[in-house]
Image (cartoon, rainbow, N blue to C red; front, side, top):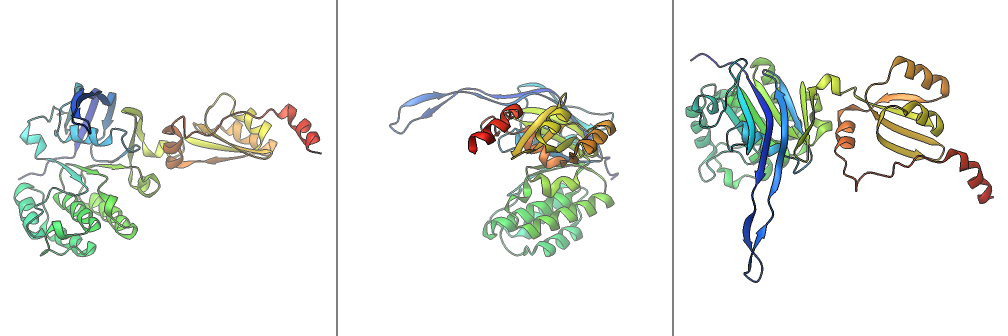
Length: 334
């Protein structure tokens, strides 16, 4: 059988809403629970043959998007398309597409009360690109015994088993929905390294959902950030890594340099202020900053993630100090 090429995917004005429902209170009285919106007008692309990071806070809508890609649910509105480049179509009840898509969650799709070997045999029958030798190599790396039942494994070993299934299946569209959550730090980094090595040798499209941005950003070639059910950005990772800039120096100087830029964050420490802005600063800005005694730096993807998804309650005060009154306050202190 000829291997399928990597899949692409597209979300176009996608909405997912949950209607009101009935539930019972502590005294047995039934009452209506308000509906909610999981996705609100989501539009973005997942490029074929790249590793895409789907970033967002808990409850942002990441798992809902991934469930749509795997045809586990249908959108309330809009369209979700996937398949090889040039042949995108709705995956819902399309066996030819869904057999080439693998959504891997933390606990994995396994036979919990049979030995791990039984799950591997199931995947060997189900997935045409399955590499049994590679699967055993990964299980040895993660120290997951073949003769143990998944139900008897620790949470970390269950996560490692799920990661193994996702890597060894080599599906044209492989989706990891925060599969690393149960792993300890050394195992997580072993998983990241294995993913990169096998992706380089066996190209396919990989979507990795994560909120551990600092750990995972080295993997990404494309990034989609979703917050409260909406896409904040969907861009090549290389462009995003230099998108947030910081200005540090005397308050009046950095406030003047930041004028005209979207301010993401302000931090004051005495007479010094650090301002994070959205967007790269120009060479003219750099020269002006150097001449005025301020410094310019790059914040990186994690900083951009934190500042763009910060809630109003979490955001520190962004009050601009009244520099004209600063000397008067010093006199008052004397």
